[in-house]
Length: 414
Image 1 (tube, rainbow, N blue to C red):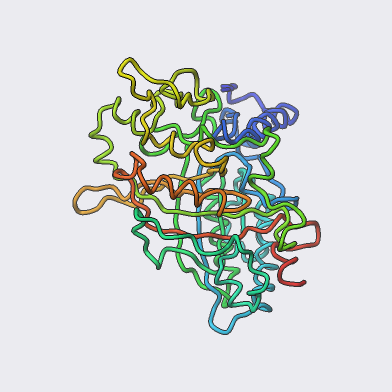
Image 2: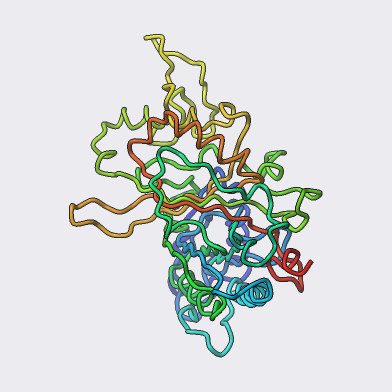
């Protein structure tokens, strides 16, 4: 949806809010639409913000922000380790500071007198700041008895080429926004507020298509050019919450409404991939590149017909196709909400791009979500020769804070 208003025409507040509301409503079906739906034209100085700039995501709620919201144009992932000697008390103070800062940032407000001014001219731009705890966090804070079983280390996979320095961490922060300066401003504020309590372990930068870059909402494409996210569970599905969020009454009450994030830096061997003919690329994935539809026909949202065979008697969707192996029906119903960012960290001396996917998968339990699917992919996915898993992390992401709470308060103060 595009609106090319004349520069002299002021965008009315009613029209602005209506457009922003439409974008938010479209974004709820994240599995089928990778970004905000609306794009407002540039306006003359002094007119209201466009819908992209005005969109704000609430900090408080049953779940933390940054899980079910539409993909944002820019993202930063950063892991921290608590400083030597820091424990539960210091961690609680840090989470209190971080939560206060995140609430201001997500509302589009400056962070006190020390604000850098980087984002002064912008609105919230759909900023989300999401916090999680790694397994080591519980050792450092003396809370081992409160560590969920679901946070047990991920098993080793044969395709892993993991860099320990860029994996795991005591604390994890996901930042996303539809403006690069807004996202960077949040990153700097979070880093600054860490103070002496925690130090950065690793940090990664990502991006997606900008809202309004397509004529209508579309599932995002990754750097291989493939539509990525077609099979995501959707909030409209009756079992969405039980697949993605931790229910009440579990072993650890502080995780109620929370989720588990599997984070993987997946390098794409783009030179090798781009040498493959189009038809071979589609057979590797099991979907058409043009529109994401299954090779068995239909549209992107059509179910895969895994039993259909061609004139040669062979499956139309090959047995080792990525879409077949990762399909929930092939994995006992295992499902996860993939909400990734692409990355490009330069070109090596040999001309090879250091590029790929910052894979972020959300699920109620990684032992029944990510792990069984990745085990099957590890044993025979046709995509495996074209990707390399270079970093990994698993984080418990508590439910959203209520008014007057900070993220993790139910863990750290109970």
